[in-house]
Length: 330
Image 1 (cartoon, rainbow, N blue to C red):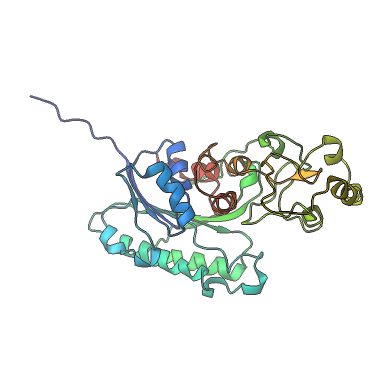
Image 2 (image 1 turned 180 degrees about the horizontal axis):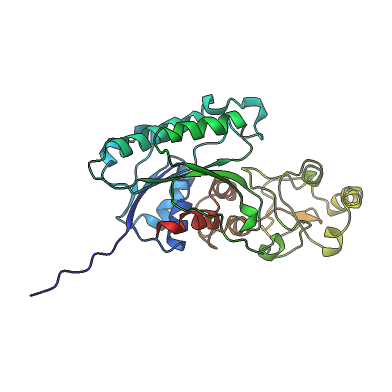
């Protein structure tokens, strides 16, 4: 008698606010087999990056707007929900519109909760539903506790961990993670430094600053970089990089003046050039590396501007952090 084939175990994943699908990259890196990957995303640039990689994959299913997803329809399908709901109104970086979970964008957390509840409550199959949520560590204690309380209503075994991506990557990125994955552990530390991922030039910090949607300028951005600790820059010369902050700020205006650079856009400079004679900004490739995204995953996608690629990376999850957090699902 012919023996039935052995079933290969795998999981079905729902990734809300999926961005460029770093959750998929992390699960695959952790060695977890994905049967179906349901993505919810509406940003056209993130979707273009997704389509570049997964348009021919019938197991990669794009669901679109999170507000239009019916969790009951997915109730018997999903094993793991991953999401990082918008931090716009939660982050300390946005003091003007820091309305927390009542903010226009950050209130989308409640859409994720709705979907989680419906998948969990209406499933006719008695199996465990796992979830992993990411958001900024700079939110207020009130918002942090509110999120924990909301998730506890569905998952009494929810736990909260705080991780700085700098533990496993070349860049700082302090985040909170809520999950019910059993025995979840903080990923093992890595010794990789900012300088290790730079293609040319020199840096003056062991770890880069957190990636934001926009960086500093190539005219006077060095002052914002040093005085406000915002953005990331790469210096042309090692000697200059090793000088004190005070000396850098004294010398830079003369270097900028001698370079003749006045901040013209579309000036024809390459990503790796130093048009102001002193420093440049991280390239798309280097920004991928700061987030432990594979080389070329974003930088190699055609027909998307550098600005939009960097924004997509800045909104992504740090792959190696998520990899460590989901490993016990194996």
